[in-house]
Length: 564
Image (cartoon, rainbow, N blue to C red; front, top):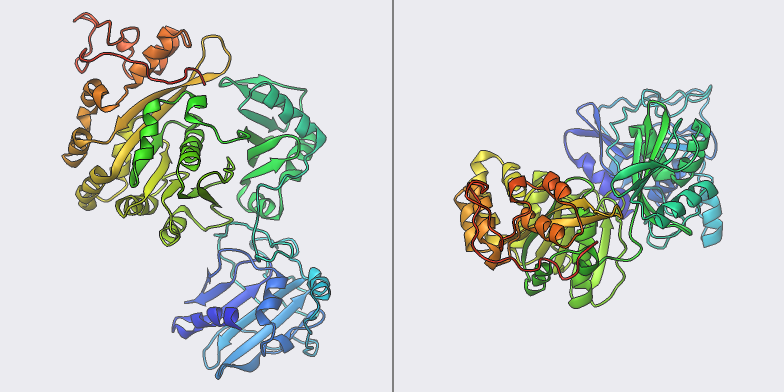
């Protein structure tokens, strides 16, 4: 009854006239003639039966195709007008307060008499009783909410644009509707062989497309990995991976994003979409174990984060630059070194973190939480020490991240920006001009690191290596942020080596001098190519020097371990 009461509270508002529950769709409240979703997930017939179980509404559910007449029913002393319809395996429940006008139809001609459906007490019998109430395929967007039959005219229900996260019902789980994405699933033999080949060749991605041969991305370049696939063959490789949630997202939006664990292959991040020639699948191969800073070749200065208990750390870079991998390495650093509570909010969850010294709670947007913003809001009441955010996408998420960092939490996050200066500027520009002064002040107080990285092809063609620009928090950086003088950041990076700062050009020069990358490649990835080939120990001539360059200081090793 308590769950039903939560929904009936919407009818206490004067502008809500009706609550509609339909299997296969989100529950909606009819407000000013328009249906507004009130649940984040679609409801199944099983959910509706459980909702009315042990309530006066249970006796109104038809045992076969038909509908009950609009019936006045008392619930906790309040009179409601209720109609329940059934067509095949689809259930529809409409509830309104007595005395309010709505568009409920009259009792349909030929409707069967209401029959009470008993709920078996035995758990096995109960499961058998509700198995037949799984939702059927969704009707067309412009079609009726309940399929029309000769005996039941379809009650008109305005369906909102899907705003759900497409989570399927759980199978008899004691936790209710809960989905695990780390349970291995079977894959077609052809797909499994292709993915095993990709791992053997150290590929990062696999592309499968109708009418084209499959391709592997190795060292940033695509290479053909088999014969051309027909539309049927491509569908046979890709579509079996879609569960009910992903299949509905694919049908409604034309694409599906998810992560999965395949038997004999490992963990993958998957995107399946519709395109001109048919279907397209992209598979990102995720590391089997959480990476470490040393294994990725990241600067040893990042270990200084272990000394912080609050603040904001942003990992930035273009798409495909390994931001998520670096974020996983930072989470693993704290998981291995400190006894803390770490909460990650990802879309989707990629690297699985086993419990070491820390407790790691990994939440996936769309399955375990509605959005980054709502997860961050809830996480502040979950006793976290470290919060890792998959991506800062909007102002609300940035606002919550700053609030968490300001109130004593250490926050890690990623942003798709090319440099440290652009990262800080983007964080500030997400807010209205009137709020930016306060945002600059807050950011100056909490920012600890900005790690901007780029993946650069190796000289020997054997993969890629990371080049890093590192901004460290301190009075010099905080003053530039507070005074809105970010244009001076290149000069600060030049003279900030003593504070642990690293220019992207210095990182590239170190890779050139160690023979890992070529000087031509370094110039292609540098912000100022004129600096490449001139370390701090070998100053440029005045004619070669950039106006913002300074030759003060000496260059020391940037990495504890070179290479990826």
